[in-house]
Image 1: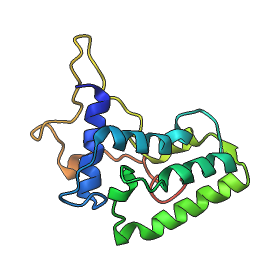
Image 2: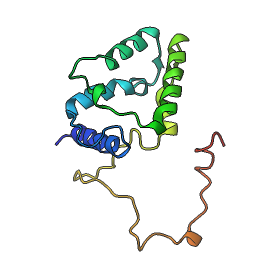
Image 3: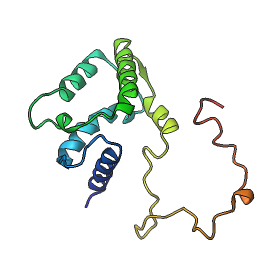
Image 4: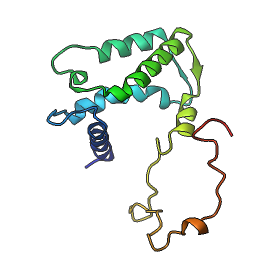
Length: 156
């Protein structure tokens, strides 16, 4: 199994866990990967320029009504409707203004683990950095860590 195969299987599990794919709905994992991969395009490059042409191409692609189109298998849970509307409207504004920027850096800053690959030893075994339960410090023994302060709510 390739890493991409494991990744798309994890994506499918998460989509199901959050209600984007309902029970009993089968999806072709290759089609799912092909559908989702272009959505990450702005985060693939150090600098990306949003444009009307890019948006037009994406809108055409995701609204394709052929029976094999994967979008017809998705469900948008009610709790995600507002964030979907806000994010798509925001992308529309970025495209109208033809904004160019370092969007990859922003994704890396605000989405922990987005591009992380597990560390690999010389013998190609992944390294697990999580402490064993008996090695974990008690809450009152844990060192104070202010390095992450401000990440969730804005700038520190």
